[in-house]
Length: 267
Length: 78
Ligand SMILES: [Zn+2]
Image (cartoon, rainbow over all chains, first blue to last red; front, side, top):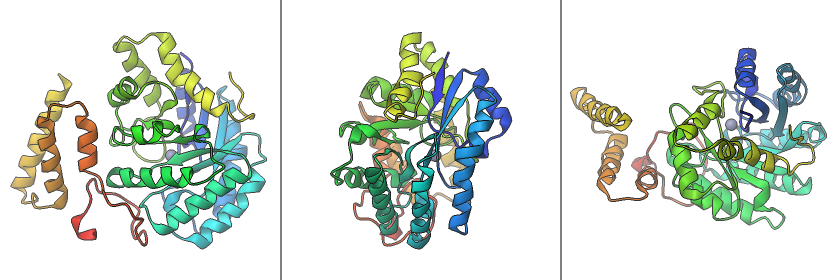
């Protein structure tokens, strides 16, 4: 089975995880910029992080025959300080030239604050100015519904943003229709302790359809499973879905979304 | 039946809260209300429960003073 891991934070995973991904059939990883588990003290910290995800991580992935793509931003958890956020955003244009960069992400909201929303809108403007794809993080738990609505409104309020070029990630049953009905792509994150289980993700495919949707592990430094996508594929097979359907969900759909960037090379 | 062990785990969790005198917490109240939605006829029980455990306000908050979330909206933060 071939598949794409469309949301993984490989900087916080071991090289053994690359081996496991490769052995499970992973051909491509997609790494949005995110929170490092702590707040960085300066824009210089982000400069080095952007170097890591555009220079070093693609080389580490290539050793396991995995193509590595990435996305740039200051994540919403660190967006409460607009001064720092704007310094980091000023670094983005120079890195947009790098060959593995597909767009702006994962931007979004965390606690749904005014500052987070202002910085989200400024990121959306960068994406519009540089004609970039957008990958969006939605908030956790009780904050997800409100945050998803605010994010959808912010994106729809921008005249140059095409929803077909935006993926809104970490949807659950109550937010998937808000995203899909407006023409956006939706991402489902398979986490052992929150977000969705493989069974719920497959349920959502049955309920909301299998177009403009992908599933990912969002594996990072927290409790997460880098092999959750192939495990969900096994669960699909147990439910009777055939190889062609599984390939559409775990390979073709992410390839279709990422392929809107000329940088993406199908495998 | 995988759901059986999950249901019993929730029951044991509620018993544990009582035993340790922790049942009077806004998250437990929200959980108990959400559990009552399991008795509905569906479809859409999962979305209903997620909605019940969501902040239903619409305006952005003034400032983020924490980074985490708790699982249910805190009635005192309104
Ligand atoms: Zn992420």
